[in-house]
Length: 242
Image (cartoon, rainbow, N blue to C red; front, side, top):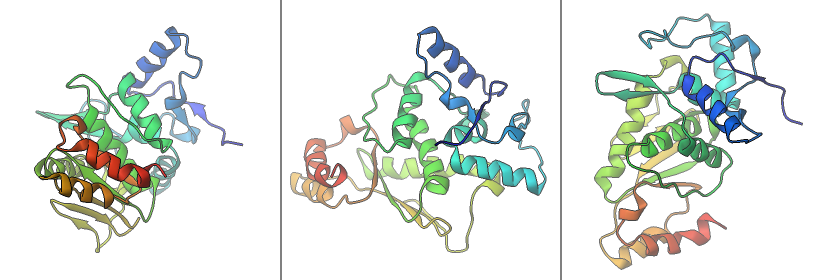
């Protein structure tokens, strides 16, 4: 049996409330799972000042409750914790049907192809999901970030770090043996690693790259623009889907 939870219907992240109303109007019965909250004591807790988005101060007990909720509830992380840098400041993570479907599939460990119009948060939404996975959702795991060229893979690692940097520091496990550079992230606390994948310049290199992808978590951003993407996918698919 699953744990009991309440619906966080008074969340200040209105994009989640609007999504509930949109799904309800469409006649979808399972329309508010992304509003779940296991610890009812957190229902009236605002992580950030609504005006400035600066983190509020909490005692150790409340911090522990927040961390415990994040650990078992990725929707709470997306809804209440995640922020995204934008020109001139920051905004809270915004839910829409595309990234709702993406998050549900990723948290269910399903292979996913996502196609959305431009400027609909495809990349940023994926990165935010991986932040939860990297620090809370798994341990002892290898994650690969691929793109049409190595520079873009490294850019997504930078975006990952930029988002982590604006989150409350006490929410992010830190260790002296952590690694943070342009091609690799490593958390000594969770023993998770993220690496930036190189691009393939020839069919032979693409086949070799695909065969070497044995990581349990693999993300190719802008896959349609990846050179030799079919070769890479066909080479990697038996291991990724097996």
